[in-house]
Image (cartoon, rainbow, N blue to C red; front, side, top):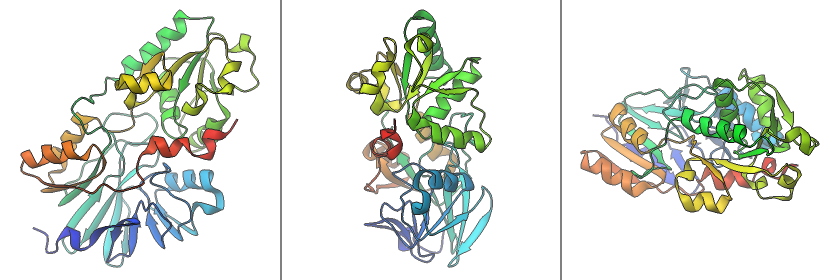
Length: 347
């Protein structure tokens, strides 16, 4: 048993999770003096902090997205390295969510708390896979924290996409995918499936696709969709941010067959709302089975749930004899945040 109560040193505040002895916040949703950032999505990585500690890849993403506003001082910490801040030992484990994503491991006075950030357990060719470590408290997301959310194999969803592309050679297959993580993963999964033709991308995706390539993630030949004629795009796969699916931009495509890549495509109303003819259930978050498997693997006697469908996971944990509480952190919700970024509005 740890010698200190977890809630006595890691506290929920109006700015987010605050580590009192280290005087830093984990994924604060307002600017702070020192931020530990788990990954580059806009609901976890905010601009304007005086100092930011994150993996080198996350810092590169923040610089690409925010420029000088990424943070006053940017401190890289690689997976497995350790940093002591005010007596708190900090390290990162891969989270498997997007490139550079990490679980923050905090250790103080014999107590180990792991803050998951966002994560998934399945293999992703664009980032390091999730790693397990035992702890006293596991702070987990629960975006898909209901038993109805069980994501199908990625290979089957990509096969459906390729089948549609083959069946409709006169149409462009337009895939909605968020600019950080999802777009690059869809591209990499297509390459894994043997698709070696050029892929066309919306200008909003170019910057982060370029950065992934610079950081060693092979995406193959990508061409700008803007400026390509309808004849060139017939029978091709085009990726764009979700905001462009039903936008004026998409009218330049030849009779686009609209697809949307998201874990939310399990919900028919969400697919209809997006106007998706081809819903692709491809998520960068753990589904229900992965969430409960993670609780079993980390073997933490206490679990805090940050955001998502907290109640169901808290109830499940309690039934398994695990102390559990919902934190209901504000400012979370990657998809809503991503839709508001500058990349989404780019031509």
